[in-house]
Length: 67
Image 1 (spheres, rainbow, N blue to C red):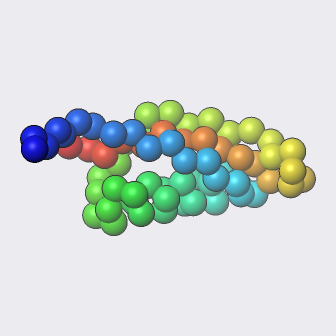
Image 2 (tube, rainbow, N blue to C red):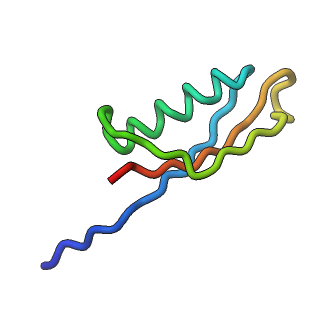
């Protein structure tokens, strides 16, 4: 059986009250997936109002591990 290696991206969706909270939650999920000592690139990040929770925002962030 051959081992195939290719880069993966991870898309996470988080909710929080501040930009810093969104960043920390997204980063924590990415490090959980890629490993706690991984160096990460952010491919894209978008935030919007969270209609289910007033005064909160939802962000979708795409990460890639630096090779």
